[in-house]
Image (tube, rainbow, N blue to C red; front, side, top):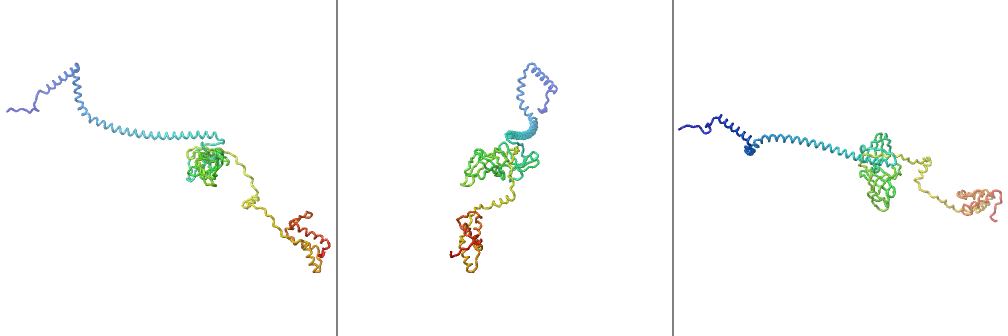
Length: 393
């Protein structure tokens, strides 16, 4: 039995021969392909067949490269998003500032236009902040006594009256708005000239016309302007517009609700009207005595003249004289005429003596007081020694 090696280890041609053969074969193929271009189709077929294997071999490398690109792109995108958000916020702020400046410029232009049409001098001002008291309607401006601001000056905007200066400091001033409960302004209806007084209603932002007659000619939509009767607000400034008219019972006062025309809660720039209208002089002071007399008479009712009371009837003087003579005769004494005249005068009342006419004046013939002097007339004759008449005669 002959021994032979397994087929795997079976040796063929020598390795050098194999290398030489394959090298020559390769050179021949290269020459043929370069000169004759006969292997182009073979190469394309081989590339097509080997392409899947090539892609499968490159997948690990491509996966690692794509993973690095993925994470780097995510970080870049996040950074870009942050930058865009910050730019968006900055652009939004810039846009808001631009809108605010545009609105402020428009308001300033309107104020300048209104300032040119005002008949009195005015100056621009800006609201710094609202008053601290929440129950009042007040704002603080950036103008004070150093700028010529005084108490009572009106404050307006391009649409109408805003309020009145109620406190003044060196650098600032406090303005009470028109809608404050303690604020009032004399107004008149632009349509018919009806005068009234508008009062603020507080936080509601409206105005009231109080004590209006039920039949007053006021309609919804009427415009109210300043009447100028107070000497503070110039006449003709727009104040409010009537939005509600309530009819009440006969004999009671009506209620009129108005909406201010000015931007009381909207604008920040205002005009302070430097109105220098001279007030009428005060009347001269009365003397102290006359003032006290007038004060004492104010509370007294009006007194009508009271007629004098009628005098009671008195007996005539001749009847008294004989009675006195009889009494003297009974006593055996002569009664002088002067005493008789005194008795007759004693019986005349004091009122008759007051109303008696003077010497030489004509004597009236009517009334008891007029008859008394005639009855006493014989007394002077008796005093001169004239004979006394007797009863028998």
